[in-house]
Length: 123
Image (spheres, rainbow, N blue to C red):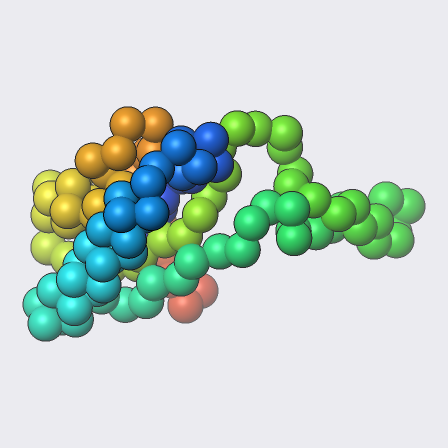
């Protein structure tokens, strides 16, 4: 089963961390990635740029309309994700609990099963 484990970032929380705490989070992600590689559960992982660098695309009257910046004004945003292939949801939750951000008050980790991949719907 595939699961998307997404990390939701609150910039105010990150700004309040010390340099040592930020370094510990980064080092923790490195160890987590290595563990997932060894277990064979990692499909991919990506960190995303700040939402201020985003573009929102919509189509109006048949023409694309592009707006700079995040889609919604929110204090939290998607900061990155891990796509894993593991036995079940319980294992995905167990993995999510090992992400360093999960231990930081104000940061969130979300686990969602992938409904389909490569164009095929999984039921």
